[in-house]
Length: 354
Image 1 (cartoon, one colour):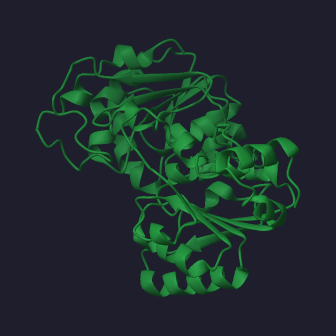
Image 2 (tube, helix red, strand yellow):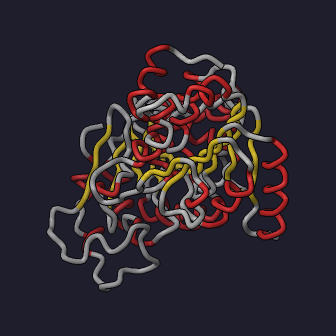
């Protein structure tokens, strides 16, 4: 499949040879692998956009973990979505996927995941070109591996895009999701009552969550003309019920577990503001270019997981804490037992100007 002269010249410049000429003309089947969390899948979508733009006739597949497949339902640039069930029969499913991937005979496999299970699949894929990060234990089999550095301020999107820079150029794109007509119809009722804000108060990690009492304060501060919708997974229903009950505001509603991932994105798209933790909803908002206020507690923006909407506000404590950050993903409880990184963020700072 031909690529533009400009891209071909860039490949020659980057590699110092014409070793990619054949590959660029023969990319017919591509597999992207990201079997981590929901937000990680969203941050991988710029690769879909760029690869489709560069190789519009190529068949592109995406491998993700079970539970995240709803993010890519109806995606216009995908041929197949492959699902890895890690919870039920993980080893059996891993070998079944390995056989399926090898049978496909991909021209290019790009692995964004840095752990062994995905690396094994790349190793066994038989792909003509294997690309991934150096931290993967199977990176020895990659034809091209990129150094993965966290904490330097480089965004995860940019890290991911470096995996295909030799094929599609260095441009960094915003993530993108595609809620369909049915998704829009599902949330149209909630949109029909006038302006609203969305809040996603929960996270898998406790120390990434702005405390419940702070969310209560924020809800009470939202001007009366805005409805308040709390969004999240079915497991978040109880926590958000408590927040709403304590806030005592009649025009706030718990939608946790009632919307799919794409329906949540569709609702966020037209919100006056989306208030989120450093978690997947921040990236979902970015993927529909919705306004977002992202709260960092135990983690820091320098890790490279901040929202990238045109209207983005990043909020964190102003206190210099020797214990922050305390980890890349957060913890189930504050290691120092004071949680100042979260409790020290005033609701006034988060509220901002809707």
